[in-house]
Length: 126
Image (spheres, rainbow, N blue to C red):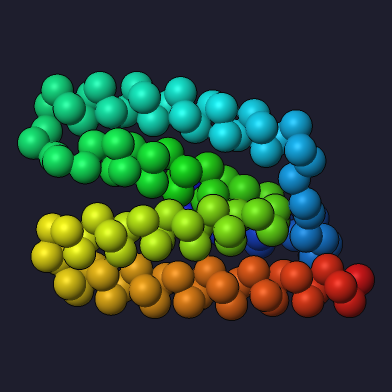
């Protein structure tokens, strides 16, 4: 996805610096489809791994993937989804005593806040 995003943002049409909002219907579709994907992932994680946080792991994984896709297409809500996922990852990694990852997720959370504020200011100045 990172390579696709880099290509998309490097293309000639990337000179357009528009940032978009999702519609209510788009948000509803994203939430419902992610919950369905999370249920599928929970059954896989529960069957093939020993994780004790299968539900949180599945939800954060599904929503992180969607947030990355939304980021590629410059939807401001991607930063909110990333922030929520990062904060959930702080809990997950703290529960596993993976403190270096906790620190990394805290830094990612600050980056998501900065990204959201930057895009919000950009929209206000358009």
